[in-house]
Length: 267
Image (tube, rainbow, N blue to C red; front, side, top):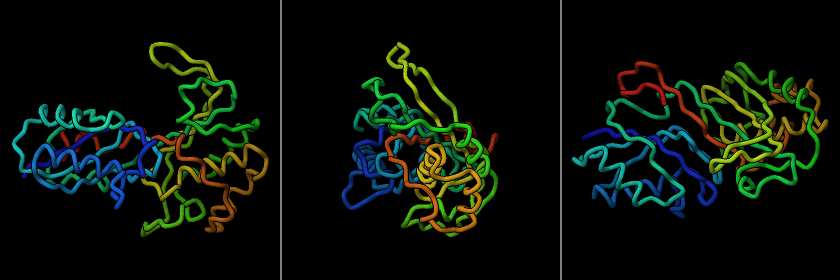
């Protein structure tokens, strides 16, 4: 059996997330069906991150086993020809059989986009959360600094989370402002906020719940000093609302440099 690793991106707007469901309208199901149509064999596809319904990915990693003798280049071309236009395979490679895209990951980076400009471009409305009030960014940054490091994030996990432990380590949390973004060879002006979070792993809805809580801090509804108390409470009702899925992107999954289980080490 050959062990195949995929690097892919997708617009999650029209899908019920990564994880396979009875409806079949998931990224995982789409990939499995297309791989079967090409190789003639059913496969089990493992993903690095189980993104939620409506969440996007720029650097999702997945892996599967196959007895197909199709070359890597042919497999990539065939998959991109059969997949919907909002799912693209960026790279394919053979990897060692021990490689697991989820459990071998050292850390993952997500970012979330928000807009505070009602006159923004029509081309970004599907990929951001529009905030209709001014936010105190310095207060949000101070609150974000209290979330970095190792904590029990029970207060910031979504219902239905099956993780065995709620302790996670946030390596970095950055809040930046963007006044333009490149699109279709032009620079489009706007007023965006980008929240980037890098951690060893994430709980269900954890990023969106962090963003929702930080926005409440920015609006003055939660004080920065309350953030530590929210963590200590281990009670979801104490934190802010869950931010909409549309603004969330899985940016990158990190693996050990020089790990022989994958030829390129880091995605």
